[in-house]
Length: 294
Image (cartoon, rainbow, N blue to C red; front, side):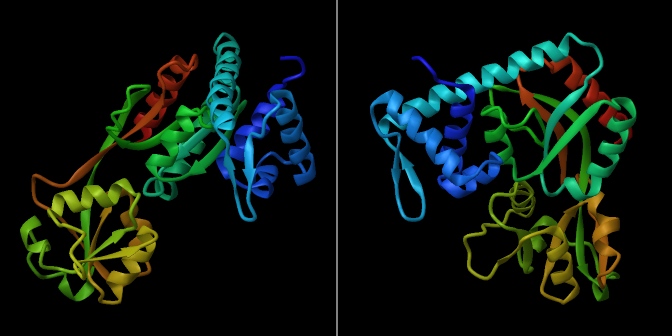
């Protein structure tokens, strides 16, 4: 096919991902008319419409769906060719797109950035905070290079590298500080405050407490660990947070922190990246640095 360019494939992939011309154009740093023109040129090459244009969003046609699958394969292959060149140049330089889950990013990310900046001064970190499901999707589609998540993710196409393990702690109102530490069973009778659906930390907390969140009134949701802790300080219930979040999130709330007796609820934090990524050796070096400061 004469004239098909990587730029057009990137624009088309962005349009398919955002399902909106304006948001896709913004993500590509071009004007909406320019993006529309590139999509029309693609459609002319295929002699078929690639998208159904609605008033609020677009949908891919069957031809568009097939093109999207191929486009993502091509773009990923190009990314990995670039990484192959970088892997042969010695110390890691240039762009590294790092994703981090929200229950790690505010508490550990500054230390990661500092350590990597000292070790790799020519490294340009691009950061994204998102839930695990979104980070895995971005890794598989080539929009991220590596992510820090809770393990395991059990995705055959991704490599896992364990960094550290940390405990969960119980946050409850300050007046409960002298009370016995509840067991997983007694927590079932309490009002449990958890993150919204989509956060792996929510699922881990529910598993420890053996709580069915489908029961009305038993579980309340918050958008962040900070919100949950403030809700506890207002007497709305109790919550679990990871150990790394304690200092930051409890300093301005009237709450008490209790640590469970063994066996404590915990999670393993690690790095994941595509198994085919040519930068695997360098990413393992990064993992070793992060593990050393954890």
